Length: 618
Image 1 (cartoon, rainbow, N blue to C red):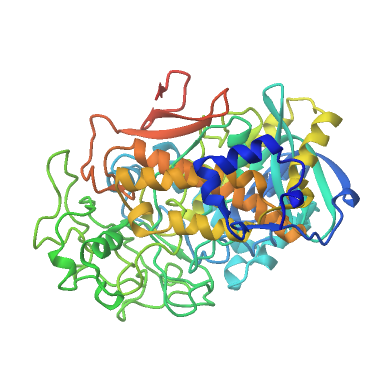
Image 2: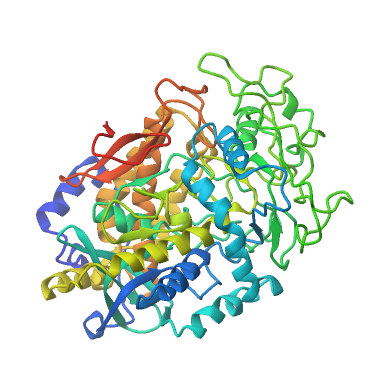
């Protein structure tokens, strides 16, 4: 290819600057531009039509949180419109979730106060107790509604999700990718995106928006988050919202057989109907196995709990002494749809750790008191992670409910008026920075969706509708379609593969050291500055991939910078160069926001507080 193929949106001066700099040297080769190719488009971007919609409450996302957000906003009297990148109840992490927590006072030995305290102990103080309590208090009511809709009757959720939506005549647009949130005069006024199946750009005028867009990752194999790329988080960040939780890591294990299948990893079943869980506090889905592999290079078959090599690993992530709690009444409903563990009905399908059922490790250690000396079981696998594959099948995702938009209150409201979030799109820290209660993720999504729906409806009843100027619509349309309009550039697949090679290695994402994270950050900034602006797309499907790739790059930058900033180890964040807790400096969450100059800014928010203008800006 020749330089004349490059579209005019790359100026000659900028291109020559790139070619003569260090970044340009990496891009140029004797055969042309490495990774660069002509864009042979299959559609004419100029022929895409605009479609405009108006509503009180716009719900973005078709999972559990989106379902309850739409239903409760409608029932509170608001006009509601729901859009989803996939099919209702059939995309994102929703199909994977098979257990939902319900706190029933008649069946539990612990009170809600005790439950909240035990979650806090497991999470080393990193949970937001207001959202922990909220989930427990309202979980049973949400479960009862799901039962009425037929949720527990099938392993597939589309029919049960469709029932309350169709009964209320709530408009639903599926397979529509939202790329922009729109803010005017300091408040949310709508959103914009495009249809994957039709050649249309959609604009939504709304008094309030609820993000139920889930979490995301770097499109790893082995966990059903391939279509989740932190879209909601990055859209909100781009208009000034604060986001949080990027340093934490989810440790769901994978499998070598059918690695990319939607697999119920806890039970080894592909088609299980959903069931209920009761109080059972754990310290799960951390990076214990990742540390063992880093230190010993254990083969997969030697990574199960209690193995000889595991028990001899020095150091590593530690586990607080929380005293596992189970319901006293594990009836048929409690074990509905779940196989017994070792012949015992009502357990969670996980083998005991190191042969001891219910022993959760040692008390937290302070800075200077290293956990897990030689012969210790501190590096052992948490329940449910043994005998599988090292955590990494969900690479790029944090612990459920620990990342997303920063809430300013218990109503799922973000730092931008009119913008709400629920489920894994809200950084509520409901469980903290480690997974503490099996089934609470799905329950939390249902509860938060309902809370956000009612709050957004109330907000919408008090504000007047705001229009979106034609100038703003034209600008957004140009940004959405930019990859289609480029005559040449980088494909989303090529950049995604490069990003995965940088971010997914165990020694970058899970077992962290400053020098390696700084090296990875240099590559990510290279992608951000010299590759992301030149993403190309040939059709509507690739256009979706281009926007997802952009979001992953920004999320990777957030993840590395937040991990560098937290100079301690806590829960699912492990620094090899800072292996201890630092309660003197780090009883705080990290918030991220875009500064006035467009740069990424960071601040500390003390555990247990709500964000204020006095947060410790760093």
